[in-house]
Image: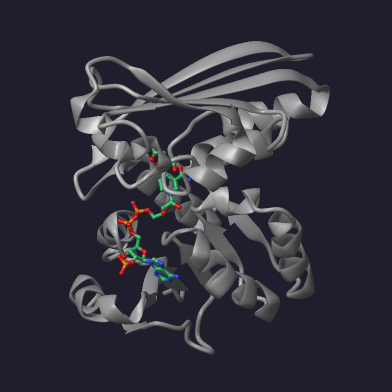
Length: 265
Ligand SMILES: NC(=O)C1=CN([C@@H]2O[C@H](COP(=O)(O)OP(=O)(O)OC[C@H]3O[C@@H](n4cnc5c(N)ncnc54)[C@H](OP(=O)(O)O)[C@@H]3O)[C@@H](O)[C@H]2O)C=CC1
Ligand SMILES: O=C([O-])CC(=O)C(=O)O
């Protein structure tokens, strides 16, 4: 019997809990540790009764770190893990929008002779976009449309009552860098699209609160030497967090399975 890859899961909220459920009983991937803020340890123990639960990564016995926690967790847990030589899979891609942070992540991975993998998350066609970049891209536009409740607790609330919106409202227009910094829990996709394509400053982003939709709708329009494409994803949100699409969970699990599969797709 092969030994399973020992995973430390950082963050045990809507995505983390679902990842735990999907990996339960997997012979090749075992979550042996869960890292959460101190006040969330008791609930994480219930979600992962067989794992070591704490607010720091174990010093040894981890083959792979998976982040499903939020931007701050990358600085706190992912950077040191990379520097120690542990590969990391990251969901909070928007963290790379902070000036110099992508370089910091790369430097930590290089120092540890390992790799940090950014998941595609709630968006598709990242493979096509990253391939198209090699031939040269002329423009990439991303539009994120979510129900008003998904924008609660964000700058979208400034000067408007989200609950009273009668029609679709553009709450942000600007670069992917600004979007990811202003909406850290809602614009990771903007950062992912830009990192795969034209970069954080040249990728144009529109974010929309739309009372007529119950889905998280992501649209990418790209043009370049390859030709062009338009992609629209109509994602179902997770019941535990309306900001987050269920596809993000499946994308994380796919990334993990591909790391151990003999044939990866
Ligand atoms: N790439 C993509 O397409 C997407 C990426 N995301 C990213 O994934 C993140 C998680 O999403 P989701 O699960 O829905 O969010 P939740 O808020 O449901 O869960 C986040 C969990 O992480 C915990 N947490 C927060 N900070 C830390 C930390 N420093 N160390 C360890 N744990 C921490 C939280 O604990 P507590 O509640 O106690 O604070 C909470 O349990 C989002 O913040 C976003 O950055 C989300 C959607 C799409
Ligand atoms: O899950 C989604 O639909 C997208 C999301 O929150 C993000 O980009 O941060």
